[in-house]
Image (cartoon, rainbow, N blue to C red; front, top):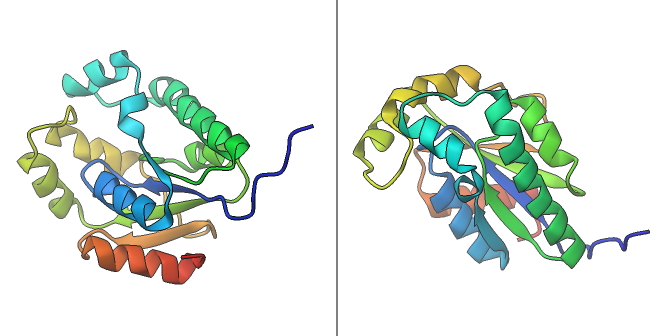
Length: 174
């Protein structure tokens, strides 16, 4: 029998397509919450990074081991009584469900916005393996979150601090 995690622990998955600002928002939210921040991209197997670098979109077979690695980190944090904020695209409901199963009360912050904004962002960055050519495939894979009560949708074009405040206002426990 495992011990119940402390009530003050929290798991937030910052989700959305590549280039929506998951890392920036996630690191800012984690600092505000006194939580650890995990950059989900760092948990991708090398084969996934290579595939995306070649401009090939990932499929479920590619993503599931990656999502399972993220879920393992959630379980580790929960067992240790630690709060964690994780940047992870979590594009499909089934992916979000897998992450929900990793710990109690997993929450999602979805940074959403128009494809044109995301294409401009991805096209201007030079330090990431994800090319702009894959943005459309990410939008095509993204499944609506509107019926998922644990998902807070945020406008990616808003200031990061404003989005953090909005998230905390909606989800409480600042």
